[in-house]
Length: 391
Figure 1 (cartoon, one colour):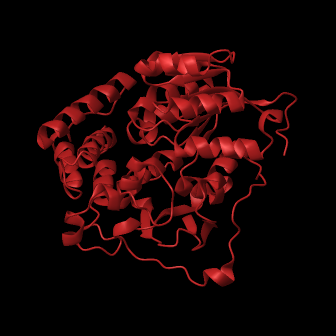
Figure 2 (cartoon, rainbow, N blue to C red):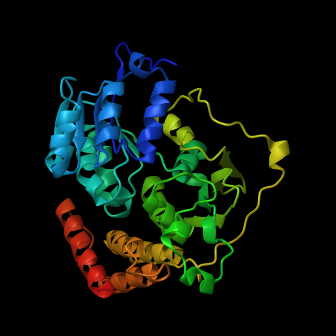
Figure 3 (tube, helix red, strand yellow):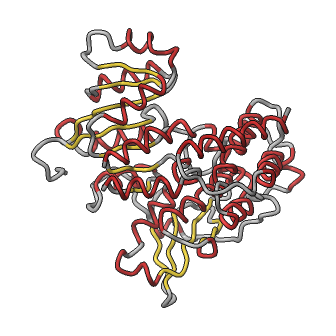
């Protein structure tokens, strides 16, 4: 495949050492590598060996570690390569300012907010895999992309599926979107069984291969809760238009229902490279080595309503959308602190939702954020309150 440009297309990959970043580099390789793409920037965190290897292989112009203390090891690992090195928040902002046509925003957590926003303001096309940009700063972020003039290309498999089947000239006829959820490892577990969940059992997703935190978020359905809020901002929906259905096979990635009763769905094997390839090649469809569905072998597709008594994160997402203001930022920040506490063994699996809801109630009267400083201030306050509850 060619990009239709005289010169290679310039890409930056924020979070290249994570699962999304690694899959992005794999897609780039399959679509021609250096013949069609120029890698401006790769960023990672503490996996310096992997980041340096990626930078050398891809021929990146700049490699950035988000960890200030890992600047020296990264500098040493790339000595003699001609690849520039930077570190910390200033390094991430330098990465955002680098000339790139397309940016994969896959830095996990609020650390990805500022550099992704800066890249959007610069006018780059943003392939969005960072949830916090929309959950914590949805209105500000969407407005920045619009003002910058770039495209906003969702990479989450569910939002990418909606993006693929949402007919642009029929947005007025959209009645609902239906986000599918696998149900995770505890789909059939009782509340009593979920009370004793460990980190190892929570990270064992039945269908997808993901990082630790996102796997646990999927098990608790907090991941789906964040996706509900994201969908509202991405597609201009009301809370009432967003539904969730449990679909254990993860073959239908999401659906759009129209006012004539039609429902359009995007189907495929559970492989993130499909969504990444579509975002990279949009509006074209690339040729990728993805497993093809064999419907005769598939035989059946199952669906069931989610149980919000066992997975209260979904209810909290609706509460946040209904309240509006900065409740998305509060939910996300409190959830992140609770998640860290669960991983550290200081909080039970079910208590993550309890802590999150308590902090949301405490900060329910705050006005909408007017600036990113407002978002960061709310994020900090929610984290402090969640930490206080846990301690």
